[in-house]
Length: 144
Image (tube, rainbow, N blue to C red; front, side):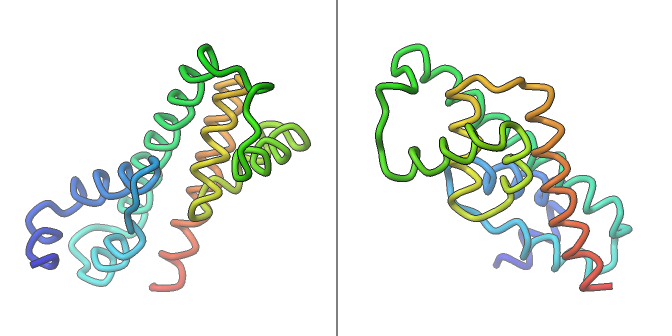
């Protein structure tokens, strides 16, 4: 069934999968990317680009959720375990910490924390995109 869905939607399915897996919802865009690369209907560079854009926009959505939440719940009033750890990285490394936004679980929380503390959105987008591009490029390289 999954094979049929991936074949039917191709690169658009990869974009949607990458977007969803970069928000607070679970997902596995790496498997979709691998399947499409091995299927060979599209150039790997194109697929890496599609996955990177989708995943980066999903992370930006999470950043924006954090940004909106910060007006109701200021960062200094939050002391949750996962948020506190992500906030520590954000405070210590700034936007550069978002190079790790591709990591499962912690990456989503890093993006949320970056928005929460209102890091510069342009720098944040750059680091998020670089990290995600590196991950998808590595996957593509390993499969080629």
